[in-house]
Length: 339
Image (cartoon, rainbow, N blue to C red; front, side, top):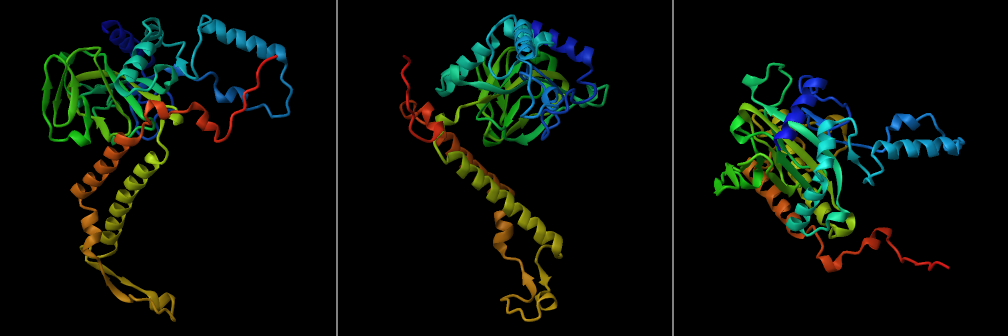
C-alpha cells in the first residue's frame, strides 16, 4: 500500500494533475474530482474520426495496429477497459492482480460472479484540507451523489494518521456512530477505514459523498463496476429513478411557487389577459396548496429517497438461479452445431 501511495504522489507531482484540477477533460463531468485515470480505452475516438463506413482500410495496417496493441500489454488478455499503460500506479496494480482481488471481494459481498464484472471507471483521487492546499485547485470534499454503476468501491492509500476527517459518507446512515474493532470507524454516517489498504464496497446507487478532510490529504483509488443487465430484476431501477424524480419535481415546484410570489403563499394568474374566453377554475389570485411545501420539506424528501433506495437495494439483483445471460437478446437462441 505504501508503494501505491508513493507512485500516486510521484505521478501527480510529475503531471501536476492535482494542482490544476482534472488532467483529462472527459472524466467526471458531473463532479469535478481532482484525480487521474487508471484505465484506458482500447483506442481514442479521434484516431478513427476521419474514416467513413465505406472507406477501405488496408488489412495490413489493421493487423499491424493489433500487433502493436498486444505488444503494448505484453500479450496479456484484457477487458473492454484496461489499466492505463503510461501510468506507474496502474502498472503496479496490474502486477499485484488488483482486479482479481476486487472482483472476488465484490463476488463474496454481493453474489455476482467475478468473471462477469467490468470497470466503468477506475481513478485515483486526492482530497486535501483547504489549509494544506497550496495550489488552491484541490478538493476537500464531494457532495452527495449516486454513481452510474450498481457497484462502487474506494481503497484508502494514505496512512489514516496522516489526515483528519474524510471518509465515505452515506445519507442513509446519517447520525449513526459505529466503531468496528480494528476494522472501521463510522461517525455521523461517514465510514473511515482504520488501515491503509482497506476497502469500502457499496452500491453506487446509495446516496453518498466524500466527507470533508480538515487536515492533511486523503488519497484513494475509486472504482465504478458494471453489473450485467441479465443480473437485474426488470423494472426495479426504473421505479427507483421515478421515485427520485418525483422528489426533485416536488422541490422544484416549491421553489417556483416561492419565486413567483411573496413568501410562497400564492401568486396571480393572468388567464383573462391571455385567454379572454377562458373558463379556467382559477383566475386571479391562486393560493399555494400547503401540500406543495409539505412535499418539499427536507426530511420528507430524504425519507422518500431512502424508501426508494431501500427498495432498489433489496430487489435489484435476481437470485442466482433466475439469471439468464441469453435474456439480453430478447428472443429465442438457436445453437448451430459445428460440422
